[in-house]
Amino acid sequence: MSFASQVRKELCSNTTSSISKLRAELYGMMLFAKKFSASKITFKTENNYTVNRYINLSENLFVPLIEKTSTLKAKKNNTKLYTVNFIDENDCRRIFEDFGHSDKKISLRINWANIDDDDLLSSFLRGVFLSCGSITNPEKSYHLEFCVPYKNLSSDLCRVFEEISQCSIKASVINRGGVFVTYIKGSEQITDLLTYIGAVNSAMEIMGTKAVKQVRNNVNRKRNSEIANIEKVAAASAKQINAIEKIMKHKKLESLPDDLKDVAYLRLENPDMSLRALGESLNPKISRSGVNHRIQRLIQIAEEIK
View (cartoon, rainbow, N blue to C red):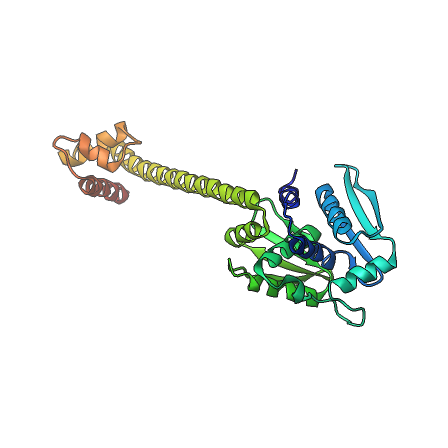
């Protein structure tokens, strides 16, 4: 089951005895569905939990004549597209007008009288998500979106998010092939919205996934840093050894002062040892900067050899 389907399943398991909340949820599902007018009400979804939720709410609240059909959308994973139509046009008009809409209005907009408090707003947005919402797997990215058929309706949805008092959500809109996509990015905004509409477990899963990703990223950064340091030390050591071998090749090492010879031989014997460790191995011991000073003198001597 995809993460989006998991969210839908959780939302559809929401139980309440409040008629006003159920009505607000159904209003969100219908208003943002395929077709919502006085002559036709059509709802489409690929999710079995969602279609059953829609039918149950419709039958319990309005008792319309319903026709449910399904078509195979993708043979590969046996995905079905469920379509629910209200057969009787009188039912469509009755429901359309019951939600405070009129076919005399040119543009379909949210009737705010149906969602005039926070509890109804939450139920309404749950219905909107079930109707046209989707969310990416948090393992990949943090992105939640609503595909809305009308520009004004999309603008109204952005305003709904601004009306939520419990959390601060900023939505944006883009036109994608004639469909207005209202989207939210960022794990905090998405988890806040999911919690608000009733998908608490899914919100917690996103937070858990984010925590695991942060730990994994920190480990990777530390590992990459350690690898970079090792490569840096190896490159520096190779340069030092090449310089010492060049001095030896020209038989000049034995003529150098003892402090330089000691560091040279110790470096040849311990190519992977750090400068600090080299200093600790000398007798008497010297600091890292002292070892580095002697090493640089050896490199300079090697560069002066023609």
